[in-house]
Structure formats: C-alpha cells, structure tokens
Length: 631
Image 1 (cartoon, rainbow, N blue to C red):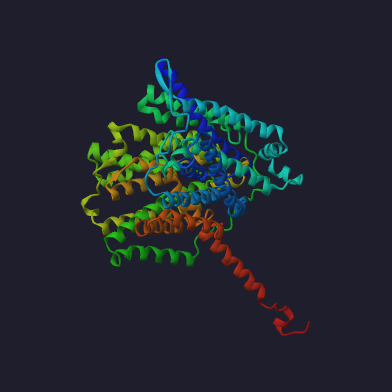
Image 2 (tube, one colour):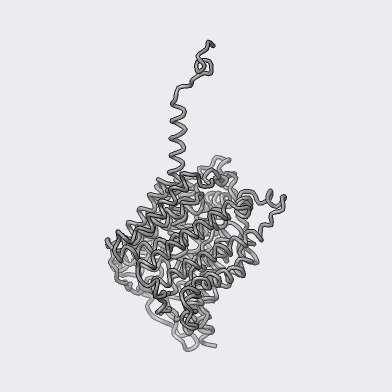
C-alpha cells in the first residue's frame, strides 16, 4: 500500500508539467485551430534556456526567476514565429499548418544541438528543494510536492485569466466562433498572437520545471509531444479543465502501468485515448469544433484524367527510372529504391487524404504492419519473399478492416487523432512484445530472394511496384468508386441523398490505402534486411504527410514529386551536412510559404495564370474584320 501511495503522488507531480504543456497546446488549437506540432520544440527550448540560467543563478529566487525569464524568452521567439510565418497560413488547410510547425521543430532540434552541443545536460537541483521526505517509509522528493502544488495553482490562474478578464472573454468567444468575434471589430491578429504567446510560455515553463528531474536532451520535444496530444484529445481540444483532468489520468496510468502491468504500460494511455475518441470524440470536457464559415471548398480543377501529353510524360518518367542503374553506383541505386518505396507510401496516403478527404496522422501503422507481418512470416515460417510481398499487405489490410470500422465513424481532426492512437497502440505493442517482435532490437535477417539480391534487381522490383501502385490508384481515383469518395469529401449530405453510403465507401478506401502502405512496408523491410519499431513511430507518419503536402494536396502526381524531393533532400542532407534537420526545416518552411498548394499544385496554378494573361494580352479580332467585311 505504501508503494501505491508514493506512485500516486509521483503521478500527480508528473501531471503538473504535463498539464502546463498540454494547456498551452489546447489554448492555441482552441483559438487558432492550428495543430501546433512545434509545441514540443518550445518545451525543449524552455528547458535548454532555463538550464543555462539556473547554473548561473544558484539561489532559490534565482532558480524560479530563471524559469520565468526562460519562458518569456521562448514566448518572444514564439511571437516572432507567429507574426512572420503562421499569420501567412491561418487560412490555409490545417495540414499545411502542421507541415509548417513540423519544419519549425526540425529547425529547433538542430539549433539546440548547435548552441548547446549533442550531449545530454544534467541541470542543478532546485536550491532549497533538493531533499526528500518520508511518506509511509518511502522517500519522496520535496520538489515533487512543489510540482503537486504548482499544477492546481497554474490551473487556477489560467481559469481566472479566462473568466475574469476581458481578454479571457474574447479568447473564449474566439474558441466558440472566430468569425463572430471578428465581426464585432476585435483585432483577431493580435488576439491570436497573445494566445500563441501564452501557450508557448506555458510549454517553455513546463520544460524548465523538468530540469531538476530529467536530463535536457534534443530529443525531448518528440518524447513529450505525443503525450501532450493524448492529454489534449482525452480532455477535449480547447478545454483547459479537460487538459488538467486528462493530465492527471495519463500521469496516473503511466505511474501505475509500470508498477502493475509493465508489459503493456505504454499501451494504456493510447488505448484510453482511442476509447474516448470512439465514445466522445470531442473529449471528456470539450465541445464539438465549429468549422470555419469561410473554409474554402476543396479545389477540383487539378483532378483530370491524363491527357496524351501526360501519358507520354509518364512513360518517359518510368523509362528514365528503369535506366537509372546504368548511370548510378550501388549507393545511388539504394537511394533510388528508397525513393520508390517512399512513392508507394505517399501515394497510399494521398489516396486516403486527397481523394477520400480523410487526414490520417497514423499512416505509419499500415507500413509497419506490412513490414512486421512479412518479417515474422520469414522468421517463423521461412516464407519466400515472393509470397511475403502479398501476405504483408494483406495483414495490414486485415488490421485496417477492424481499425477502419471505428475510424471512419469520425471526421476531421477527430479521425486524424484516432488514427494517431491506432498507430501508437501498435507501436507500443511492437516495442513491448519482445518475445515476438524483438522490442527495440527489431527483427533482422529479412533478405530478398536470390534473384532480387543485387541492388539493380531489387531496384527494378521497387520500380515495378511503384509504377503499378501509381497506376492502380490513379485508376481508382477516376473510377465510380473514386467519384463516390470525392463526392463524400466535397458534400456528404448531397452524397447521402443520392444513395452513397459514407461509412462503407470510406471504410473501403481506408483498407485499400492500408494495403498499399503495407506493400511499401514489405519492400522497406527486405531492402534494409530488418525492421524496427520506429517504422511505426509518429515521425514516419509525419514523413508521409510531408511528402503528400510538399507535392500538392489536390493533385495525383503531387505525391510522386513530393516523395522524390523530400526523400532525396533528407538523405543528401543527412550524408553531407552536420545539421540536416536545420536545413531541411528551413526548406520545408520556405516551401510552405512559396508553394502553398504544394510544388505541383502551385506550379500548375502559376502556369494556368500565365496562360490566362497570355490570352488576355492578345488583341481582340472582331468577326467583321476577321471576315474582311465592314462592321
């Protein structure tokens, strides 16, 4: 019993810093509707700056002053980012905003490595709070009791600010109806800036609070952002009270999960997140999100079957891909094979998102299921590669039949978050089921058959698979099934009136997308000769989103271009620069600003505008003049 009490108190202490970060993210999303993936980066920057200040200000007052000053410094950085970048894309699709904030995360990761070095930093203990007290015979750090007190205190201050000030009234009103607030003459830009600054301050303060408890690392942003998303979803997007309650729930699950059920401790919080999304998508204390009245309808101009020129161009592209091994060395061929696998993965996600209108944050689950399914079949049943190429995707599709039944009942951000929960549950199982999957040691020795063992032969296999997948998905896009999907995406109510069953059609699309993503996973496993849990991680899902959005959200060929550009750029930067994430992040942010419709989408838009200006510049020739007669 004594140990349970200590675990409970430890969970409450962990909930304090988790609540601070989650409340900031919830505020930002509630008002601006931005899924701020960079929130973990602000948490990390707060920890690093606070570390530098606390080692200089070695007094009790200096420690807390260092946390406040560090948080204010990060808040100023956040304000600059909001004014310079995010204001430009507030009316852009939510996924484009996610891409921009992910670019900020990449920049921040390498920036802290550049300024503080790659080593983990161990901060000083909080002056005057470094001792421990005995709780039922077990030692409990004094600092943990400070955190337990600090969590409710900050919650109370935020509640007072939101309910007893005019600014808080405007924030709550903007959470419910941004257009009405704007119609009342409120300057939305500065309201958004203020909310963003407060959210960033809370995240940075939460990072600073962790210095006496954990090492400061440049990986802490990604480690915290997943838990924060879970807290925000369980509590309710935009609900501060919900974030407080969910932070306690998640922290207690982590504390007691390790103690009581260590084998599935990582699964628990994602399972709770999935259950909440299925039963109450808007969270325990949240409210349903009101979509913007000014949301632009999906653009349909780019959806055209291939013309004769397009077919010829596609054939030339495939021929050039086939001939690549004759001009590249083994390393270049290996990179080209990775690009082909990335094309398959991106196309499978593009079909789900662009055609089906279903934004998935957990598409890596399907890639990982295909890869692990094939690897386990090879390891335990000595299955040949040829058979595994079919079995792996079928395993991914089989899991998608079950998961998709729940997922397609939701839409918009709720669907995206449930797919994230699905992927994280699978990642947790793979990571902790060591006897079957090898845990973080992975599965090794997954090699292709003899005929495909050379780099050239395996590359040609990936080219054949990529060309087949692109052709199949393009055919499906312009089939009656594809038109039904796009009808549901553009106008669900009208589609229902003509007899299109929303759940059935979208469920089928979910399974088809999973099948092709599973194929990408099988090819990935055989190329690498192994598979590890990070293939199912959130970073892999984000990679897929980046490839789709970089190429162009509303184009068929955009995913191909996006996959080639992103994969080649990331591999080249990783091999030739010391700070690849910094450069890649800058490139992503610039592409978001310069190519808001993606590389292909924006290029096509500019080309169409050029054609219109060219036609308008031609002199008008009247009919009478053309016929040589008098007017």
